[in-house]
Length: 611
Image (tube, rainbow, N blue to C red):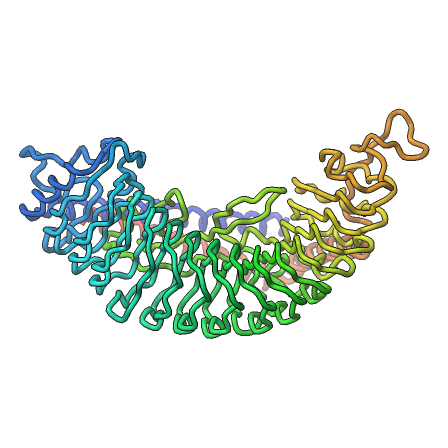
């Protein structure tokens, strides 16, 4: 009877707490909505400047508005207050236009090209200008350099041509510049007169050529630098060592040569480095492991690196993505790869690496245009800051794919197309959160360890074109997430284990192994019957039987601990009258306090909302 009363009172207390939380959440949401509504009304009631209103109408005339996004920009009496127009913001005190969000007004078709009116210069207080993904098909207007208060300029994906105008160097307050996905050409020129407050610079996917300028000491605040997919040549400049705040460096797909620059060891905040698809050479520097401790993505693919991998790479405890494919690396893979703890379920596998926020010029934190992601990699947080998703080319499921997203969810190692030797690197088999592993086109030999069956998160496994031999481990039938498997061109033998995903793959994924037999190959194994019974997939028992024993005793000890504690409390309250009375008195007082707390706070919130 005592235990029943204990449970009844405990449930009553929990229901009261839950009800209080729900009621508080509803009332706070209501209050927040009212405040948002009031703030919006205040912002919309601002009267815009007449000269700026006329300038906006002139700007509208030059833009191809395919989707009618600027329909609220009118010249009638009802539309006199331009601060109420869509896709722009005004200063709440002065009424000056400060933000223009004019991205994707059309489908980018240059047959219906837009034009940029010089009336833009009348918006002297403009801080934020986004014209991305509109079809202009003209050079970048030089008068952009005459907007003195501009902090954010996004001209990506606009079909701009010609050289980058020198006048952009006059924008002394500019912190964000995106000129990517255009057809800009010529050499990149940077000097002390250029913008020194930049934190974000993206010039990728253009036709820029020549050497990368060696004047980065004037850009010490830079956090994001993307010069990828151009025609830059020469060596990576030494002055890059001045970029102490740099978090992401992308130089992919150029014509760079020389060794991996030692000057990067000064950039200790680097988290993402992609210098793939170039002509860099030399050995992989050992200092990367200790001097770049924040590194979570390292892409050196398709270069001319040679030699063995240094053990110091194992110090990269935050690493989620390692791509060393298509080089000339050799020797054994370090066994200490098991220390890459970000790719284990005890590591930091859920870390969000979008901590390199780029400060936006947005003053309205509830602005709807500051939410969501663009067609490429841009995202905006609820705070109004701008962040860019990671992007890299990755060999995934047998094809080269461009991955965009949080690399904490990728967890991939690609060592393919090198000259690595030795047995299967057992350290990798301990990375329990690994989702992609590519060891193809190397010189590995020996048996694949049974521990590979513990990589339950594995989605892609490519061991093709090596010298692996022996049986295919039956533990692999437990890899239920496996979507791509290639074991072709090895020396595997015996029957392909039955069960799980292994029979679902095309037979070509097993070809080139003369000793293999069984489904999905047409070659039968000795003693096969007409109908083959497929056993259920492995649950990993053969991987480590100690784990099963551990789990069994874990459940037993949990049950014993719970029952001992529960009945110990009940018996104590039943035997000891003083404790029983004190316990029920405590619950009664707690219930009364919660009731009073809820009533008082509800009354206060009602008064606050009505006031």
